[in-house]
Image (cartoon, rainbow, N blue to C red; front, side, top):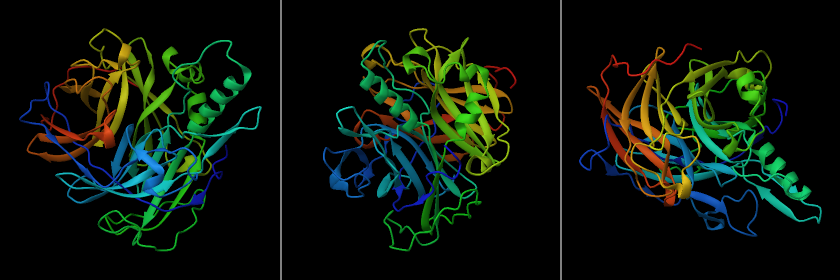
Length: 405
């Protein structure tokens, strides 16, 4: 897919807040609910129009997988959230005590047509959101479906191939002044076309204007250039096939956190120059391994979300492969701080219930070394937002030393 492909305009906005995580298992005293008013969109209902922005055409979100905001401090914040069963993303206005769901941003959908002519809308498999340099970024997993059987019918194999291709897109969303109101709704301003390769304009908190977006497939070039990743880029998730679940932008570079593969106990962050992704020029790809330790069953942990924090990142680490029955145990998921080559575990997360997986992370406050973050989950209705708090001194104590890139 060329960098200029899929450049289109669209409308809608999303709100959601995330919170920072503690040093040990989160206590009831340090955690609180983070409710969302309005409806976060999930899967498109059967026989509803593709690309709809009508809330009635969608089920409630049950698979929230990422959130990012235009500012990293203060409230309210303009944010975007993504559910991995939708064909788009959504505006969310984040406040300290909760969020307000806003407009939906439908992305171009891909359709699979089987040998009998029956059509099926393919999930974008949106897994992560980031914000940086005046634009939001939303990525698909860039991987294959979780389970695939050898020797399956040709039609089924073709559908799985199409699903994988649909997920291998990265969108850049620019919201200009005046496009969104304080409740996350669209103001009706005219939209602008997204010129391929054009630098995004600075976004001004809640005064966002015409919304535009472009898509690119160039991240696949960076993946193919890394021998560790290329060998597993077309394998199913359960076989350590590549899957992106975290995304961050910092200092002109885009960082993709990989859930899988985990090789010799090390997960990976793939970073590239952000602007060339949507134009031309070298991507300057770099691969950084991180030792995130095992889950409660001794299995490998990968990156389930990645967000900028201070001069580095916060990471949700979680099982590379979900446990049988999705029975999440205390300590399966943990929060790490990563900066200057140093990796520090900040908090082992408790179990929030079977099939409840923390996949969205948003720092809310950072005051005197005490950090509150928002967790959004895959499993509960509309993310099931919960906050946790942990201590994070300005100079972290190193508890793990990942190898150099």
